[in-house]
Each structure stands twice: as C-alpha cells, then as structure tokens.
Image (cartoon, rainbow, N blue to C red; front, side):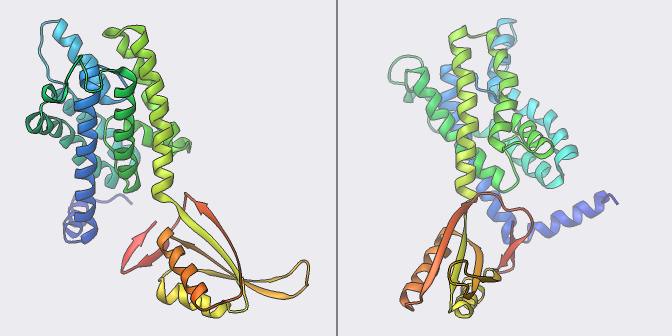
Length: 313
C-alpha cells in the first residue's frame, strides 16, 4: 500500500529530530563541496567532457553561447538535475530522491561559492587550465569526484544528474556501481563532439571509464568489513567479547577437524577494521590458543547488527 503525502510529511518531521539526519546532511554538503570544486577548478577550465551532467551542461552552455544566448553552466546543472530528480523519486525511492534533491540543488550554487571564494583565474598561473595539461586535469577531477560519489552512494544519495541513471542501472540490472557510472557516463561523452576536438573527446571517454573504476575502489574501501572466523577452545569467552564489548552479532558453528577428528567450535563475525584490531588485541592479551582466518567483505545485504540504537546495513 502506497504512503500518502501526509505520511511522508510525518516521516520527514520525525527524521529532522534524529542524529542520523543531521550527520548525513553534513556528509552530503561536504561531499558536494568536493564535487563542486572538482567541476569548477578542473572540468570547466579544461573543457573536458566527462560523462556527467556537469559535462553536458558545459557542452550546452557553449552551444547556447554560439547561438547568442548566454546561459551559465551552474544554471544548466540546476535545470537538468531538476528534471532527472523525477526519475530518482519514481524508480529508486523517496529517501534516495529526497537526498538527491538536496545534493542536486546545491551543486550549482556551490560552484558559484567556489567562484567567489577563490576565482579560478587566481589559481591558473599559466595556460588555460589549473594543471595546464588535460591528463593531469582529468586525474585531479576524477579523483575528487569519485571520492564524493562513493561517500554519497554509501548513504543512499548521489551527486545527482547521471548518477541517478547509474543508480537505476545498479538497482535493476545489478551491475557494480562503478560499472553503472561508466555506462551512464559514456552515454553523454559523445555530445562533446559539438565543442571539442576528437582528442579531447577520447580523453573524456577514458576519464569516464577511470571514474567508474575509482568509484568502485572507494566504495569497496568505505564498505569494507572483516569476516573473521575463529576456532578455539575459548569460544565462549570470545563470543561474549564480540557480543558484549564490540556489540556485534556472531554465529557459532560446531565442526569436526578433518585431520584430528576432534570436535571444535568456530565463531564467525563481521567486524569493522578497528573492531577487528580490538579483537586481535583481546586474544593476544589473554593468550588464547586460536586459529583465525579473516577476509574482506565489501557487500552486506540485509540488516547488520545494530549499535547504540543506529541501524547499519
């Protein structure tokens, strides 16, 4: 049964009083500030068209200028994002849609904020771009934007624009988010033929691919957890430490040793890197005889154990 507007309004008012809301608001603002700086200082001066709404806006701004209509890049970013937000609400969900409304609406104004705080003309010492080399401009832009994208994707938000299409591809076709970013971005790169030579368009396509790879890397790094498997005669003490001290869930398995035929107990848990370090220190301090295997996990579906009343997924 679909919620009414009144129900959505009630949920929104409830969210305003939570720590999670304000924390994510700060994260989204800082993430978009990084993304806006990447666009203003590296994308716009070099006129590199990476697969993004910012890139499309640069193309359209140049086209409109050639037609005699002066339209700011920041204005086009705002207008195009407003149209795409409808897709976010309908196809992905209200939470993603509302967060993306906020991030999309502040991207254009944040570009203007950077322009007032530190105009790009003061940063460019020679040539026509900050790094005075399209490849270096590309690398700086991709690194900064990918960090912003990974941070926002982690809290079920995005930078807006073609990230919305990437999220749709990720949700319905189950591609990795980096691959989804590449697919969505590649669809826009060819529009750069309207204002750029072939060489710069190829650089933009390569940049779009690198963007997808780097987004996957940062996303995996931010979501990384340790799957820890411990076999020990002190399994009960270890279980209590994980549950009571680390405040994490765990699973206990009874097994038989293939070599010794002895009955053993294995404790398995998913921990953050810091929690894993604390567990190792606990085992070392107590001189427990243990056999441990640990591996990295970058995807967790379903509810992860709650801590301090805050759900983590």
